[in-house]
Image 1 (cartoon, rainbow, N blue to C red):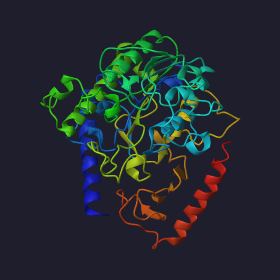
Image 2 (cartoon, rainbow, N blue to C red):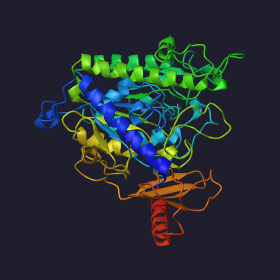
Image 3 (cartoon, rainbow, N blue to C red):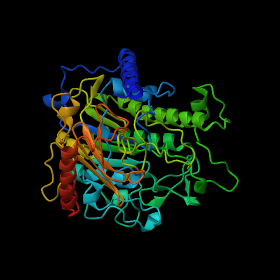
Length: 471
């Protein structure tokens, strides 16, 4: 193993152990393994909360080894559940990643495998209307569903959250917006259900508070609360009034946690404040579950929509995907391997690690099984229920994981090996890596293992042809 990579991995594991021991000693919530509430039937259908972070990198959180970052609430969540080390997203870009998460189907199969940034949001169909997303499935089991935050799946009639199965929606409809004014490309981006809305305050807290209100109103029935935060998306000059500096935005108290001035122009300091404020928003949702005594009745899943953006020469590259290679919009590990934490009291042992390769599409079948619903018979789900793997009782349910992005980028993972063809590379031919010994994808093994490479290439081509059918 490369010495630097080996040191990074060992450092991550030491930091993880320290954080888990600290968080387990601090938490006041009981997670007694002997009380399997769900299996005993005291809660027929668990509540489901998915918090989808925006552009948070693999190396951005304290519990993933970032010693400079202050994320105590996410660290505590990891100490109360399982932290995944080999969890992947369906696409390296936010729009198709969201479609894959909510349908349980690969972007190549569900018809949304691109970022439709050139089409006005109000004209975007984005995810085809024939696709079914998670809240519509869960409604069959009596769930009420709410979405609070970044939608980014089209806002043409038929494409809006409340058209697709959510009972209520409050958030920004595009791929990003200003954190205080909610402006995107010069106009208001904030909507409640289908109508324009207004809000005062920092978007992370506004969306977290809306989620908390939804949980309060629906505490006596099973609910699905989807919180796709706008943070930590990088600031966009198109979302600023003329003459306004394009800087990462965070409340003063987030800067104060580091001893920074809110007026600092150091972008790395400002980014840390954004992530810490995001951690506070996550904490608000978790605190609401505690207050309402819903913690042990609720599955909480926290993950990022893609790796942090590290495209050279674009600026504002303050995030971290360490020790992975590259970042968002690529199929290198830094673009598709993301933080993911799952807390399920009574089913998942607290303070554990899952090193099995899993993918965001797995969350739909996991939720359907938790709600005692059958998988759909009229379409293929690419996801497979990961519960046993998350609980440490089984290997990954996937022999292969696949990605297709753009006209060139493609990848397949089988166990420890990954075959990739990446457009953001000086070598756009297939390359083969052993992720177990080379997590940074630095040593191409194609010449050393030609038969393995040919096997994976043939398997990818077979899958690509089948998935392109859209069934």
